[in-house]
Length: 465
Image (cartoon, rainbow, N blue to C red; front, side, top):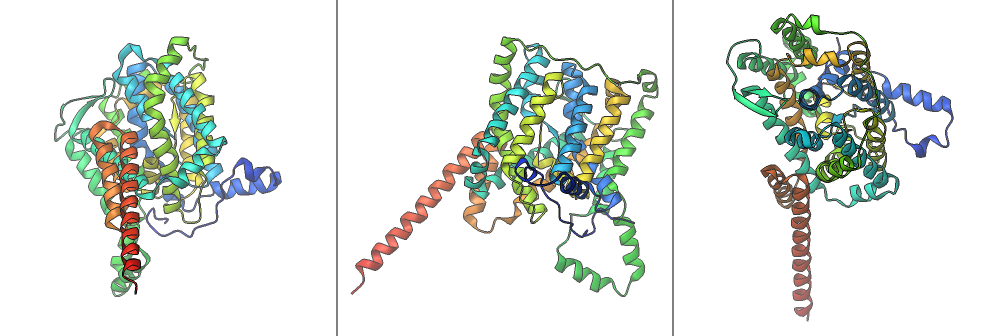
């Protein structure tokens, strides 16, 4: 059987961008798309597709319950986004909600409704498209120091992990984005269930992929014990995230069997959202301004860096990633689809559970598309009964995987800059202030080093006979 954790031979996948498509034939493009969507390992890709749901489902459910988001339309458009990005990039490039816009919408009551949400998404997408087309995003990607990027990744990873712990330990009211008290130990959404799911994933997936040296050492140790090695291989082949998610679906129907009666077949009606001048203004001020720094840093720059880390040789340009984010929102938001972006956390989660190709997210996109066309917005009845603790477990491992990307800092100065960015970002000030503080500290350290070098040079010159 295929294993989500085994080292899978890396096929060459190619980013398909406007620059590369202008001078090649349709046959070559089709061949590249097929290669980008080809599964590296069947069960591993299916398992990896579940790695992003811990972030996706809570935010979509919260917006649907609190703001009457058209869930059916959102599923259709995000499903298309998943399929297209999988074909373009050939890696499990995620499609996630724009978290800052969602947070503003949930916390602002009736003052920030669907027209304002969509206006914020369109404005953010338009700015990202301009930054990508003009090359400014690629310039930012090259100029921003790696420790600052790692700091943003670490803060986002820890933020996801802390939210996951809150989902596991506290009863959640997604419609108000609040916790309602401690979660009971027993029950179909109890602490025991979440702990068992977490232990199951750790047993199957461990801490992630081992290095080649560690794998060779383990193989040498286990050669005299073939039965143990075979058992370990069988355990590692289990699609842990898929099994946990499937368990959650079953428990959702057990918790409220009458939910079957609420299901209505057929897609939701897709209508153009009417956005007033007031909605444009509120959407830009309250939604776009706080979202833009997070989208630039986490949805584009951090995603490009993490992609090159996880998939050596696949250095996606910040230009193309920024353009795809912009086009997604300039298209879907006019019809009421949730504002979307790529996200380093989603990429880390899908990689953690075995996603290695564009086929991983394309499979997830096909599932979203089918559910949106068949069940429409009635699917919210099922999601509302899904065990939140189980979602918390999936989100926990996605957050930890993203945070672990920062372990490659090799000097104390790099760690210092990274931790400054992380600390400032986590105290509630947001990624933008954390980024600024990281840049300032990095510049000060460079000036200090330059001054020190100049002083040493002066001393040597003066001391020369």
